[in-house]
Length: 273
Image 1 (cartoon, helix red, strand yellow):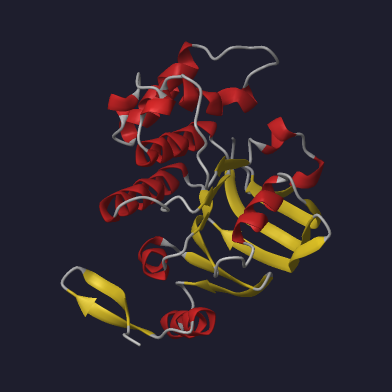
Image 2: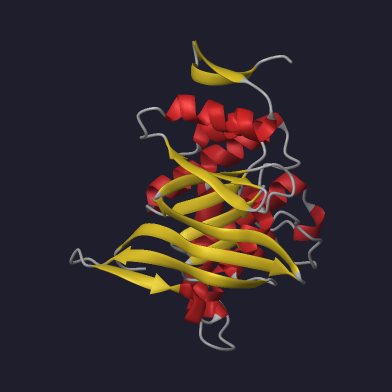
């Protein structure tokens, strides 16, 4: 996409599943970088992501992306009126549940991310496959290229989803608990690869995450949901960020944490109860 992404916004989002209202009057505005979406189980994190993508839930409100043209002019794109293909140019999705896939190679799966840019019934070309291969190499998983999606591990499949989202070249990625089910090393590798991708492409991502220590390590901004409402939004640039982060975590989880300086840098530690 020409120009650059400035902001992703939600304005007064209300979401229902069946007759039950799940999210109430959700509003926020995010800048470029990695945005952590925190909340207890059942707080509405997955529902919020799906509503922003217009996937399977009734909602009202507006989601928009503000794009900056090459001349410096900012243009707000409201996503509600776009088709699925058009919306896919602005948002890529990495779901929480990675269902079993048909017998297709990782390369073929990743190149599906180019679909929003192809004509109807047009097949991916050499350039599309080359881009997919370059992304797999950049993420260090080119060895999976000819492996089959239904025969690789869950962690490898999540990396393949990240590769497909990157090939899609959307303004923002929305990732639903991508660290779930990954071991300690793979969790950190996934987030290191994700943050590197965001820096290089100058795009943004919202990621729902259960571990507030992992979120603190990698995220730039933080959305905190509680009981279907937006409790607060924090940024590392806030003057009192660390104090506010600890306070919000205690309110959310009923547990206290502290920050500590180590040889590896600043980290967060949960206190014993």
